[in-house]
Image 1 (cartoon, rainbow, N blue to C red):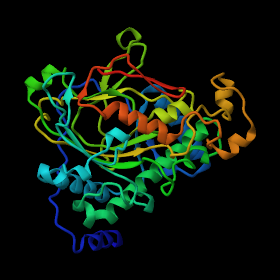
Image 2 (tube, helix red, strand yellow):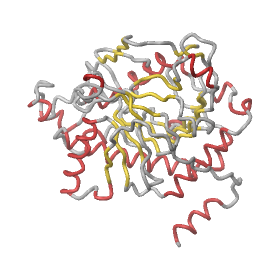
Image 3 (cartoon, one colour):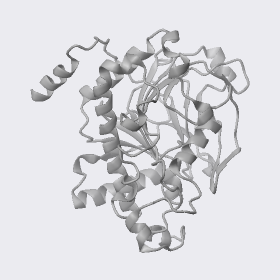
Image 4 (cartoon, one colour):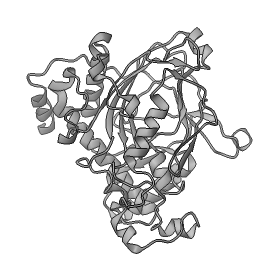
Length: 395
């Protein structure tokens, strides 16, 4: 009762919003990936954390994607964020696409509005059908970042949700440190909410596109990629389209196959998570980022706006991105050379001869990926900052 009253109090004197309706699940028999579920309700119990870390390691090694439940975030809170997102995307285009609201891709800045139809796909006349709003952290450091006035009445709710989202991610990062036999705060210390980073809470909407247009771009809605940051959290929704590239030996003679990421069964608060490039680099690819893409949904869902709710965890601006030489596991596996114990205690701090920091990597990756007028086929192209290297895929 207290929780319900608190929720009602938050809605007083706020604009009324239409309720987002969760789409029905597809009835088509799709090739689903076997995604493991990590239940964080036992987190902070010593034995529970060891078990969770083992489950997380297996999930990352098997598919790179995993589901998370038991987060403490309520279904009402998730529903409310979808309500806000849907209402924003229903605003007239001219109210969203003013220059002061747009992402500054030329400078690698992903805060604000990513405009729908902003670019073509693979040199065709077909235009991208996704729009986004990315909320920077709600701290003094980011007060001057793009803030659309539509969100002002709901800012307290959006900020609270974004902080809770990062709390979930910090638990997962503690488990990742445990996997690598590092101090629990090794990664988490580089991802605090009050610290500078390009973290953002994202609202995303894919608009239906004609079949003939999709056919010209091989049904691509978002081309294949790995995520740029540390971890990605996606609240489960039912419209199929997200696919991962598997690495199972039995799939296509070991070449892998594209499989759909299933929604989290029976839990509207469930989150789909995956490792990003930064954690891949920090772990010397022991915790590997997985290539994924979004394709045209099946026929019974293709006419639905595919609304998404995300939290993108970026490494701290000053965090040095390099293999964690203090990890006993990585040393035993021969993935890193030994280092001083001070590095293990302090975590990945910036050093005078640092090659790449979190801000440097993420901003350069955003510029490379988004600052152009066409999402071209980039299969096999190399992106590199310092000694950090990614081989791009487009399909």
